[in-house]
Length: 230
Image 1: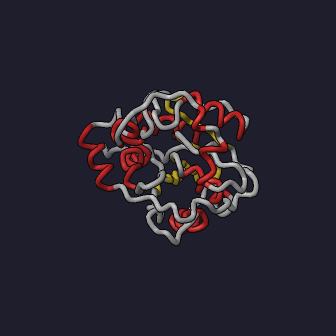
Image 2: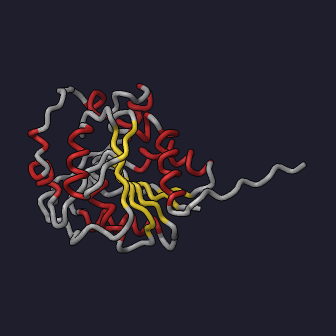
Image 3: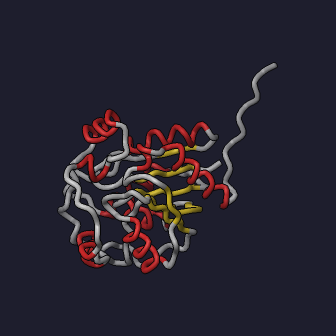
């Protein structure tokens, strides 16, 4: 059995993962999805990582999954918890020592050709059911930028198997952009699924399928379900 540790992106909450959590638990896994202190001006990447490590506790056989800006937090957790696999979904992929605020210029984001879309729904939730998108926006929090200029404490990419999963219809991080960044920063070719930037809401079963398959490759299988009494 794996424990999936699910790290949300900027200005979000652990609720983002609730549909994927339900899928993974139904398959015999455990899931943990903490709320990061993203609206706290006194909190930076170290405090974000502290929050994840505290939520993990003494659990082992961890599959650490990070969405979007969660990619800055997840590598910092790997050296502090029993992480067997790191999965980055529609991610930011930090370089060692990189301040989050410098990411856009360093990855040449502004040079990418991409369609223009106005509004939160159009950029983040274009393929999410309307009621679910509305609830996601109600639950979202302001993302503090107070410490975005601080260098990341990451010194080197962790020695943990890493998979990158991108979304072909992502309007925030276009597929071509993420393919290039994954190649340049990690030397990997990412896997791909259909959908926009928030697949945990738009395609939770498909995302859970991918995560479970990745875990199985590491020898982590769901706990067998109890047999029904005759």
